[in-house]
Amino acid sequence: MRRVPEPARAWPDTARPTRDIGTSYPEPEHMTALRPSYGILVHLRRVRAADLLAP
Image (tube, rainbow, N blue to C red):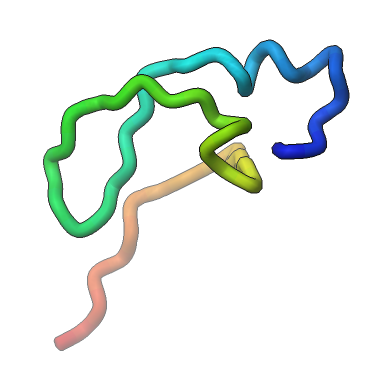
């Protein structure tokens, strides 16, 4: 993200509502620009619910 080429910089430089899921939940949304805040962006095309582990 830090080395993204010039034509693509406007999108990650714009602050957008962002939610980080960490040690406290629910957290309010924060306005965050991705490129200055993160080193990598991972996009997952498909996600699904996690499976419960057996006790």
